[in-house]
Length: 317
Image (cartoon, rainbow, N blue to C red):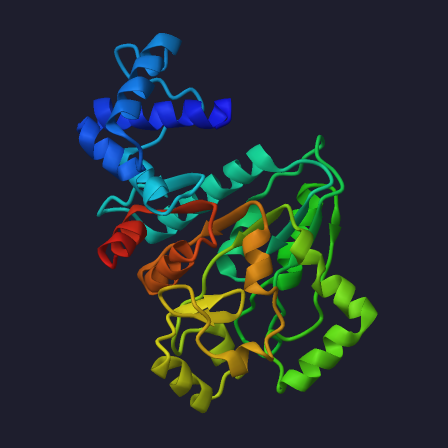
């Protein structure tokens, strides 16, 4: 075990015991380690100064709920914006966007590739990004194709441009719809060397910035006419709850319809999973089941959401 991993484990054990009142036995069961090792970690935590009168986590302030969600889904980081009953939904959305921007600023470095999913949430984040002088040559690329026949925009080109401008880089675009008429058309497109290079660029991304799409008549792909009534009925039969980068999934994160998926222009989800820093920003009751799916399937490394949304996710487990 690396020193940094052991230090993190000492912090977690100390919080569970001193802050959250868990017994050593319960800690051992939850973490899958022996009770004796729990005692050893607590002793070492006191010796190195992690535990004094209180638990000192020098890397971040973490609420009990954030800690619980991080451990529950084996995430690297969780940021949960409180949801007071009187809060204005617009102010809550702004707070989630601001937290997302702050986190991105803390991890983005020169020469990175940022792949993103489209939609209002990601557009708002890209719009709030501050121009940097110390970061350059960042490439932005969509994770999937777009749509062209919607009254409500999904902001693909704007997102790519905003990210590139904030970090002095290059915006890339996928000039294709998210769903094609046939799998043969998709195969022909991927057979073109130039298009294949662009479509595969997202595989090498350092960061994936994404949200999940809700399911039903409000889904962008359905509203845009890319999914007909017959396909929608089939998705309902297969328990679809939303989409991840235009891949329709159930609440366990599994693809629902292979025929539809075979003609979808998007990063393969196995390749998506290999991206080393996958940041999911999702809020709202309509996205709860899809969010649970991507969390269960380990498609998320960092989660930024609000308290009401994640509490509704937990209720479904």
